[in-house]
Image (cartoon, rainbow, N blue to C red; front, side, top):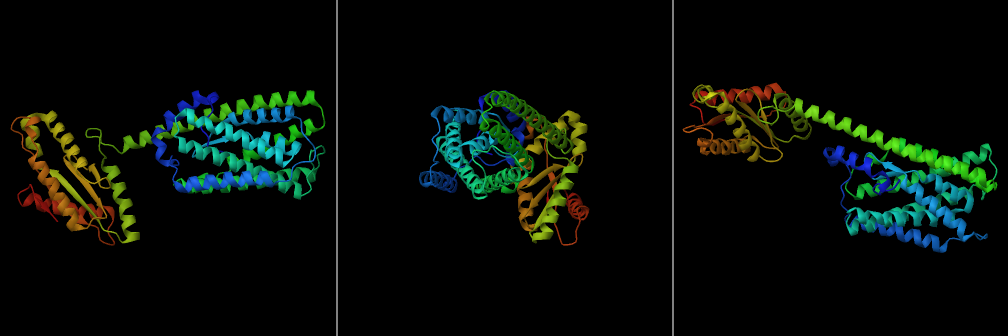
Length: 434
């Protein structure tokens, strides 16, 4: 896995996927690299360079042409990737990594893989990423994958693995599988730390689909290494061509699938929002209000934090409809909704609870604080220039405020606020009772 953006070969699907996922961005890893990320990137990159410098070089020299060919194939497999649902991309480069490891050994596999990531990661700069973000990505990707290949190669050699791998047996197959597992565990652990440092939820990096796919692709790399090391070059190139074509198809299919899943999530969320939204005012409806209060009551019950609500009713709303017609009444409801939304805290909830009745929830606010906030809203409504909607129009509101007490359910709290609202109406309207 790596944190690169898509290659240009995937741009069409990528653009569609981004457009579909715009409303889901808050669930993804924040694109912010603080000092912790830079230190982590520098540590990875520096450790990788030192490890390569002091690693024992292979005794057998390798042709520059062969090394170049392996590097080109590694670069190709890096471009065949698909978007991870939470961060970055999953590349199908494990095949090239295992081909290099089981053919050339850990040293060449490590520097070829590291150089491939180093080169590809700089493309982020040309896609609009900041210089610091790009530098961090370059160091993290190349450093991390170099260390993954070095550790995987060392594990393979410590267990007596054959390099170059020519023979296949149950023991050698198990050894390759364990090597892939070691590489995957290190990769996963480093990504976990990275996402944590970026301020995301590291638990979302833990999934089974990506690792299983990469381990399967690694076994494909083992098959390529076996054919290449037995010097059957015609079969090797034929197999390489077939596998590369399969990778392109797999990548395209994965991107289409993720695109469709993102569309389904977006449509589902849109339908859910519509079911919670009042069609006239655009604010939340009664259903959403009850859900929100229930959640806040659970939080208050667990933490002991205060919670208050207010029920607001437009005074003499029937007279407004009778005198100015229902179209004017609708405009009053819409304008009042805007007043309430713009003058409440971001953490407060405003919803239309009935015909001319609104509910305001004040999380973490006691009764007195909610009363003061309600009084402020009442005064703002009274002072509004309602002539803009209809000449001579005057609008006032009455509010009933109640605080949650242990043992209260949603309906109990709403009933308490409704009782106070009734008192406000009975006392002459245009006032707050609590």
